Amino acid sequence: MMDDMIAFCGITCSKCPTFVATQNDDNAERKDVAEKWSKQFKSDIKPEDINCDGCLATTDRIFMHCKVCNIRKCGTEKKVKNCAYCEDYACDKLSKFHERATPAVKQTLDEIKKSL
Ligand code: SF4
Ligand code: SF4
Image (tube, rainbow, N blue to C red):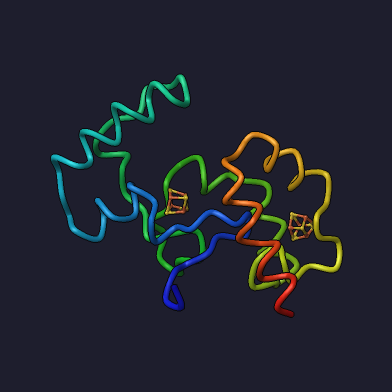
């Protein structure tokens, strides 16, 4: 979709459950995502942590793991729209992340790269 927000790493932030719960200000959904992500990331994530305007947000409201993400930091410093636009695509950091992420995340960036 044209209007989707794509993170530097290729995650579609606009379809991320944390993004959706935040934009809908939906506390039931926040609770649900907090439980799922606590298990998935083996950490203690509280419903109040489920607040995010997406990786490219100009607000300060970015989920804690994404806020400290090295890929996001690198992309911001390189001033690329996302990693597909980077001359070093795909660097080791990004490749390592893509090995762990669902294949769609890498595919999103590969498709953007092809279209450039
Ligand atoms: S930056 Fe926010 S919307 Fe994007 S993946 Fe991370 S938590 Fe989800
Ligand atoms: S060096 Fe890697 S992480 Fe940094 S912007 Fe380029 S592709 Fe993304």
